[in-house]
Length: 141
Image (cartoon, rainbow, N blue to C red):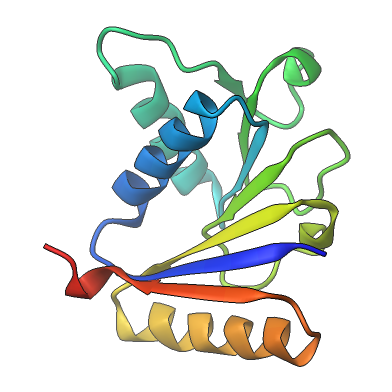
């Protein structure tokens, strides 16, 4: 069963997702990042190209012919038929394919509307019996 971790109170969800993606990549796991829209997909793509400055973080879009050979897939498509171990979601709704992953990380921004949507997703997963963990990033320095 998928273990779901919520990181809430995030001031900059793009930056937080970038940091999480680098950690997952360093662990050797395959990662899918689900974004809510094309603008977020492009912002994460740019962040992964630019940082770290001294390394390359291999990533591509879901439709790329290189997807099966690439450890990180970043896309706003509402499906995922490839392999991956970890899912990071920035979406307002649970991705319909989340249960295919061993671990999912929900990145929830500090904005009140994002926090409210995050609470609804928490209730959704909880009602279905998924193991949940929560870290409130607003209380960290």
